[in-house]
Every structure is written in C-alpha cells, then in structure tokens.
Image 1 (tube, one colour):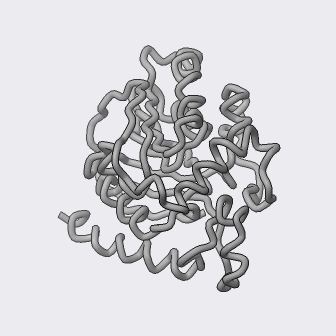
Image 2: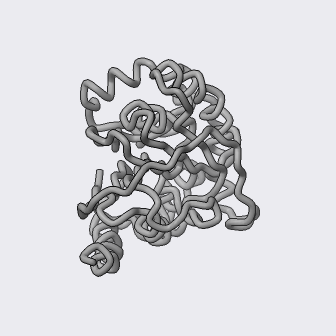
Length: 257
C-alpha cells in the first residue's frame, strides 16, 4: 500500500446522494485494454470464487473496526469484491472520499460508515454491472448506519478521466483505490488525476500489485494476466514512487500558500 499526504485545514461538507450518472466519452470502446478488463470483471467473474489467479489477495487482516463494518456490508457487495487489501484509514469522520475503480462498492460501504452522515463517498468504475450492485444496496445500508440521507454515489467512468466523471479540482479529502491502478494502461494519468481532485492536505491511499523486476514480454501478453494484473508499461515499485513524487512536487507550491 502506498500513501501520500500533506496536511492543511479541511473545507466544509458537501452532500452526496445515491446517483446513476453515466459518463460518456473516455477511451474508445475498441481499446483492447479497457475491453479486456471490462469483460473480465463484468462478464467472466460472477463472484470472487471465479478469479483465475491468486494474485489479488491481501497480505493480512484489516483492523478490528474495519472488520466490524465489513460484517454489516451486504453479501452481494462482498461476493463481487476483487481487491487485494484494505486501503481504508481510520479517523476520517466528515471527510469526502473518492474510490478509484470502486467495483461492487465494498470499500465505499466501509467508508460510508467511517465518514458518517456529514461526509460523503463517491465511487468511479467503468463497469455498469458492478455499479448496479453498488447502487442496489446503498440506501438500505446507509439507513442501517443511522444516516438520515444516503452519503454514497456511484458514477460510471474511467479513472484516467475523472474530469469527465465531473470530479472537480480540490474537491475530495481522501482518494482510495484497491487493486485497480495496476489495470490502467495510463497509470501516470491516474495519479495525476488523483492529485488534481485532492484538496491541499488530502491523502491518496491505494493497495495494489507491484513487481520487483521487469516482467517478460510473453507474460505481459497473457490474456488472463492482462485482465487481472495488466502487466504492461511501468509497474515497478521504483516507478510508482517516482511518479507519485513528481505530482507531489507539483502540488507543493499550492499547499504552502
């Protein structure tokens, strides 16, 4: 898991309601990468039992409070969860959270409970079927948490194009992502967009799959690995660090004002 942060005061709350907005545009529908990933996660997989590799697994159990909330998340949401960790910080009451590649919404549901009624959670995912699952239980779950309004919404869009998903500059306090950035064919743009939408002092937390050495070309061309890990382009831990630091450095002047 990697995190980036620089603290300033948090601005006021803005309500979020459960929505069904769909973003038009984005990468072409014929793009091999997006098509392969979308097909795998929307058509091939029906539950986590159908995963073709054991790569997307967590290294350990999440904290007790996270496990407590997970026990209340609807089974359908958990069954269609394909992440590899729990990039879910505690102590985020009242914050505005954005989940990149939110899938069935499992982490959004946990964050909904953690941020409370004054906070909000937005999930962005490119697969309609996963968003449908996430939306289906949002109202009933937030009611069970004692919220007077639904503080979750799920948007169909690409995490490389958050502007087309109507995610404004400096609009969120926390960006999370769970085993999804590795699937993007343009990872630097994902990180750039994350820092664009983060307020000064905001944080990026993501759990993902990394490589300690370069992956052979024949492995990169494997169709299953293409859909589950997307071992293309830069994926080394050193490359992740360099790209994150580049965008942190760009934001420093604004953070110091």
